[in-house]
Length: 403
Image 1 (cartoon, rainbow, N blue to C red):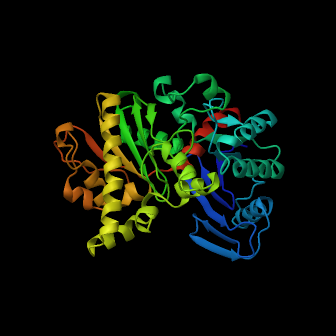
Image 2: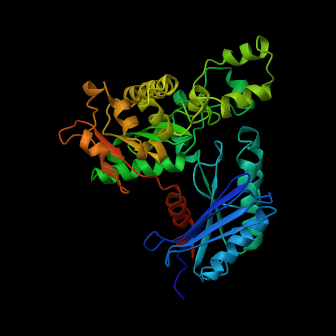
Image 3: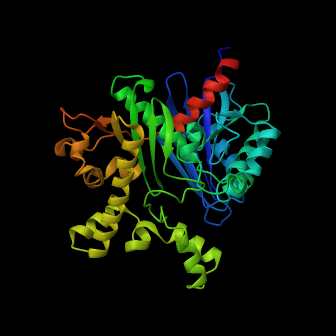
């Protein structure tokens, strides 16, 4: 029998599991789906067999991740793609935080699980759910390689001058305080795809990647290696996001506690869930914000201006960090779909060689494309991110050669 070539990618959240099954011979998708509201009476599973186009939905209580993955396995089996298939090479898991310990995709064993667990204090919302998904998948297929692919790994190439905060290093090291960065699988994929779009090897280009979704981050990628990124110890730092504040004077927290009488939990909720675009204007959907702006809504207009101002600052900062920039790449939900955001972010930066062509920018498309003028000194690209493919690619590269 030929070597197995399929990889199942699992992204386990606190109450959800997203999944895709890919065939790595041609990176084609065989199936995809989502289990949401795990642990509730109103749980839902939506599964699509991409070979046939058949989509099935099921509603009803799914008690836990074990039940969720068993339900996913059942749906895959109905399509002849079950977890017991000899064609399945591995299961790749998204893990948000790998600290400094994990700089590459890693085959999971008990020691790896212990280390991921030790990182829970710096990723309390994400790593526990990621661990649950891995443990459940291992129980279902203990003979199959389980590979952890870390959001932080791509950013571990940052120099200490970018990764360190200016606090006592002994205290920082004791509590693992440093800039780790997130969305790493997206930044890795998009920077590489941007180089391909330019007809060059990643080692030949410098790219500023702007991952703009409900969560948003920027990175400076020099010759294929990340040298700076906007998110820090947690995903709260950096750009204005859907519900997160991004950069903030840390003394604001002391002020809210001392003068505002707010608890640490209340401040945490404010900055992570009630700030950003939502906190500024009551909406975190860029489409709705643009609609309100068109109707003359001043709160929406100010929120948009603050969002763009921060974004533009990071573009300029990373231009300075890199020295020479070959391309700026927009990705994720807002970056791929919001033409006004792309235009506004680069307006006024023409002296840096940055501009968008209005007609190209207005065209909607599924693939990677250039939106800068033909004569532009710096390419501006829209590159749809594909974190699942990146996880599958890294997973298969690690285990495929051993099968």
